[in-house]
Length: 307
Image 1: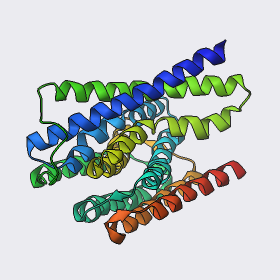
Image 2: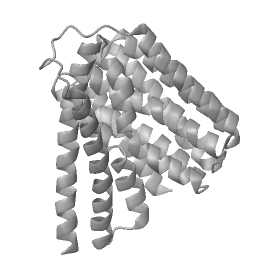
Image 3: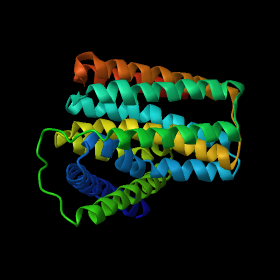
Image 4: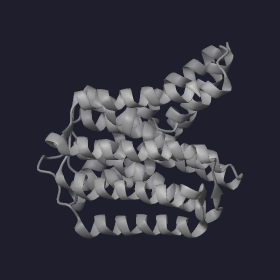
């Protein structure tokens, strides 16, 4: 009976995620055109911040409890999952178009952020002043986006802006975050009921579960041809995770991590560079490149299980 109830909750959670993603993509697109800015900027900011909420909650909660490995591991693991399984998986379904701004401005900032983290965490600690630098970099990046104010894409939105779009965007983000939360809880309960170990649950369901908002939003966006929203959501979420979530966590409580976790940060930096190179090649992430990204993640998971 418990498995049946949790299966129903799981199905409802997936439905909430999908419905929320549709609301977010449609309303964000209309708001972007109304404000005279690109869908990419909306994806990099408002949508990315909303879909990063689960990582924010898990990381800050762990930081307050002094669980630095969980704080850093959740952010790094989520970013690798975003760029591997989600970006790769979405590209397999439909190639994702990119542009010069996404590659040279946002991609370069993401690479720079990864290198900065490699420097900060080389001594296995993230100090309060380092967290302040990360948060300052995020504020500077947001100011840059809105000062540049990229013009809207050429295509006409599916519908004109309505006063309902802002509350619909908020409702969509709430549905996405709530759907992701209940999806993780119900999936964990089902896994425990059928005898799957806590470790397997932690490195699969929990890691993937906090990234379900990005998956739902990016998938719906690319299906609707909103490539700026799709790619912007993932790149923006990664930047919010690394600069905002980790930065704030370190400001609240300096963190000491396991030296072995540094390998995952190196992997993340390498994956970020690979993704930016793919975005530049042909100005799209092709299905073949999507398969490569997914395979990289499968190999990474296999290596984690083998330790």
